[in-house]
Length: 193
Image (cartoon, rainbow, N blue to C red; front, top):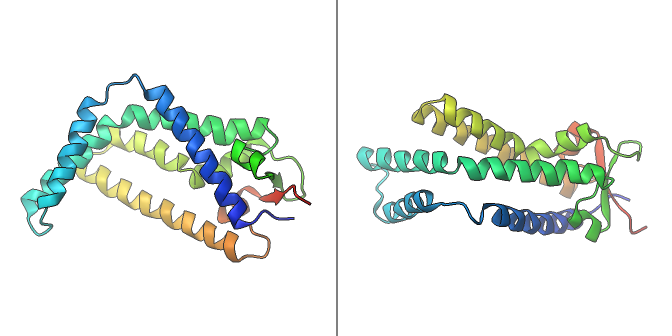
């Protein structure tokens, strides 16, 4: 029996909390003073921001770019934790994250077989923003500010659209497969009978 949208969403929220705790524990001793100062400056800037003022827009874009550069260590650590948890851990745990285990659901292959690591990786790269994070780490070093912000914005939109389409597939398709499940040739099934 296919796992419901509700089961999958609850499992994801449990996993999101676990990932957030892990990221906090790993980055706890890191110094984010400069990044936090830029973030506070951006928040203050938004209160007076006039999008028709080109100088203000340029200043805001500078702040966003600086914030992205200061976030590189966190992005890299988050990427490692995400791949470790959603790809490696799920593979070693027979297609289950902790959230999936608690909700009694699992990822299986199309013929109800055990999933391989490549299937888990393929279904994870978009749904958990792995591809977006990898691309972010590459383009922050290879593109100038304007190109970086444009490309990252486009990639964020594409990733968001992919997630929305996947959610709609899971909600409305009889087999409850998301777009990422089709790409990886997987199903998420319920173990509750």
